[in-house]
Amino acid sequence: MAINQTQTVYGVEPTQKVSVNAKSKKDRFVGLNFPLGSKLEEGGLFAGTTDETTVRSSIKQLMQTERGERVMLPEFGTNLRRFLFQPLDEVTFELIKEEVSSSFNRYIIGATLEKLSVFSLGDVGPSGGNSLKVILLFSLDQEDSILSEVEVKII
Image (cartoon, rainbow, N blue to C red; front, side, top):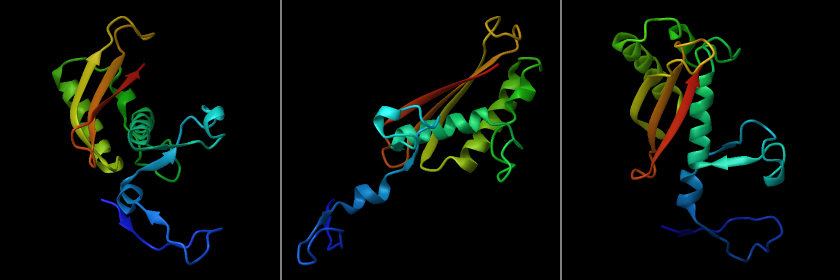
């Protein structure tokens, strides 16, 4: 739903009306593209992202950050590496799911965790059979029908 509002815009005469789509500006997520500088041709060092890309990047950062690693946010992240040398059974997988879902619900804004799966990578990883793959299926709160997937390997 578009709402016409009078807005002061630099370089536009005050008597002209500028149409602003208030809903799209208010409901959009805007963030930085990580890693910084990865898309130099598409916006420079601090290229921005919106919506699904921002949430996907936030989830990957959350999953790959150990708790205590960030100085100003010591509770940010997950402690998934502590599960690498545990027995890879249903109890361990449930503990991993609890760890991921509690961190997701605390730090990811604008998305809902729909499904969470944990798998052993078997003999693929450098640590033998003690490598994990976590797959998260999420939906954006503003677009209920769109599901997206994020896969993170813990090696």
